[in-house]
Length: 234
Image (tube, rainbow, N blue to C red; front, side, top):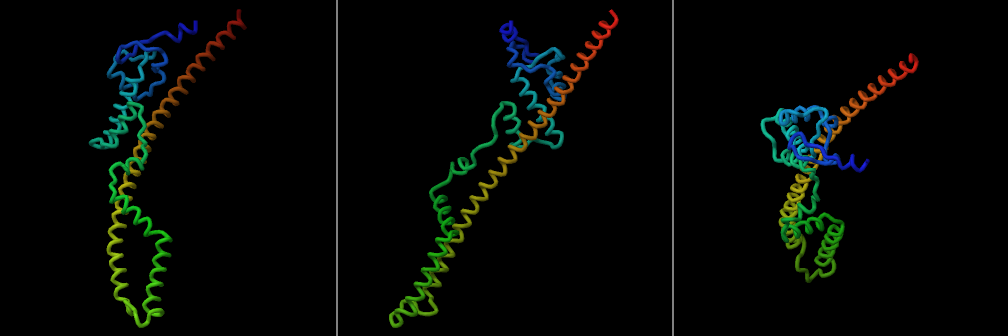
């Protein structure tokens, strides 16, 4: 008996195809706003009708699209992506590192490594050690045979050249990091926007489900009262 009930198929009110109950959503579990949209497509949409998941997701996406258009004149590419992901049950989150590293060149990787090394304690200690060694060599140890005597003009030239090359390399690395941050911010916006729409749909379904269950409880209570009255007054 249970097997027959599970195997029973119902007709989708929108596309007219037959589906098993597990692939359908009943009228009572569809949100009010989406239900009104379904009525525009299927005139026979009533309490005893069902809709398949594919058509329901498509109409939910259309409802979200219409909701966005109420507040602005056009839909952005990000919002269009969210609508499509909701319609097709796709995830919008992606691995930022994979996206960022897809088109990165050898020069970009080298610049990142140089910038990372230039901002480390290893570089600071090594830099100070070279300065101290240079000054000692040209002032205390080889007083009569110095190759860069005070005021260390050659050292100043080397330091200036190092700073001149290091600055644009660090800026290139910072620009790529800023690009990565923009990708991360866009991804966060997509996830938050989809979560907002999904939570709104869940709240609508829960409210409608609780209202439906409350009506059923009232009907059961009325039946119980009638039975009690009949038992008291046979």
